[in-house]
Image (cartoon, rainbow, N blue to C red; front, side, top):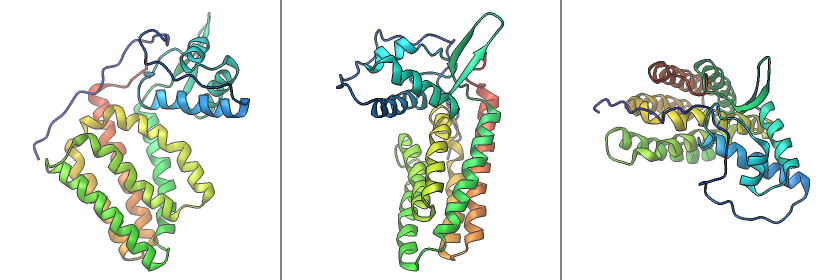
Length: 258
C-alpha cells in the first residue's frame, strides 16, 4: 500500500466556548439533579472526545450551560467530574486560574495506551478461558472485523470506518472476558484514548497492515486457548500503537500545549 501522511486537524489558540453558530441543542425537560449531572458529564465529554471542544479550549461554565440548555449547577459538577477523570485541567498563573480542555501530549498518550493495554490484557486472559463454543463465536467476529480492516489497508474500503472497526475488535474481547469492575475501568479510559485516535488516525493509516497483523496474533492466542499469549498480544498491540502515535505527534506536534 502506498504510504501517505495526512495532516491532522490543525490546532487552534485557546478560545472561550460560545454558542453562536453552533448546532442548536434540542430542548430538554428539567431533570432531577443526578440525571442532569450524568447527562451534562456525557455531553461535555462527547464534545471533548470528538474534538468539538479543542484541546486547550477555555471552559466557561455559563456558556456550556447555555449550549447544553441546562442549569449551571449540574454543568459545574460535571466539569469537576471531568477534571477528576483528566479531560479538563486547572490552569493557574500568578494572576488568574481557569479551566481548560486537557492538552493532547505524547507522554499522556503513552500512559493511556499502557493502561488500556494492561486492562485489555486481563480481559484477554478471561476471554481465552471462556467455553470453546463461545470462544469460537468470538474468534469468528474478530476475524470478520480484522478482514474488513485488511481490506481498507489494501485500499478496498472507506478509511473513515477504521476507528469504529478497531474499537469494536477490542470491545468484543473486553465484553467476552472482563468482569463488571474491569469493564467499568475500561469504559473510563477508552474515551481518553479515543481523543487521540480521532485527531491523529488519518496520519497513521499507512501502518494499518501492521495493526492487522498484531490483531492476528491476538486471534491465534484465543484459538489456542492460551491466556498468556492473548494478554501479551493485546499489550503489544497497544504499546506498538503508542509508538506509532508518538511518531505522528513528533511530526505534527502536541495539541493544546501553549
